[in-house]
Length: 353
Image (cartoon, rainbow, N blue to C red; front, side, top):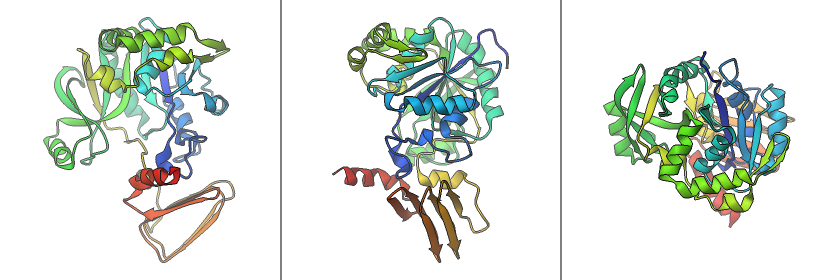
């Protein structure tokens, strides 16, 4: 890849990741875990935006994770040029605004969640290349994930007319749809999943905020203007930042801006939003089991089929079962049938009560 200005990766690492409880917790969210490879999700995200086309990343993270983030990124030679530590979570639009204000100018920003899987990195890089000419003209580009199921848990994008090779205008964004609508969109073939990965110039994003979310822009400008700095650590002013409306980039900007484009790409993407999703992308043995042990964990399975089993300490032994998810972390053990892992959310709520 070659272009005039190196792309600055913006890695969003503010999430608390409760859907992969008990391994993922607010103190140790899923992006800090090695779930699909030897590297953690955060490390894999940083590594897929390294090379001559890219500058050092800007990471927007929760202040409580600062040491962990720095240590993990240093371990893969991806030390950030700035580590922006949110005093409070205000969703993605303000988080990205902080990063855009940090670099300003016409610098292209590649915005990526820190906890997604992309198995085909060359396909991702090709999609970035396809998007760059329009990005340089001031377009806001999102990457549409080639859909393979009528997913109701994702937003969808309706793909409009082609405006450059492989780049289309966004006809409209679709909120998380009911099943019949998702089936219709999948069958129509002119929709993609909204994967939450974006490419645009910093000034183009800030201009869109000025038009569509001026209060948010003002709050973020004040938060960065009055930030405390320690080396590469940036602590935005808490009072100013708390005044920013809590909105997603889709709602605050992408659904309202004029020049919004989509590059549809098939790149082995998953948001790894559940234990079922991990089972789907994991290497499995002849019986369809995906098992992993870390630390002192151990897994023994006899006459067991199509299970996901993970442990970071306890020994888990299974005999004569199938289609289960069993995850042990510390003193917590989760057991549920495959296909119901979205219900972990309900479990978390019950435990809070």
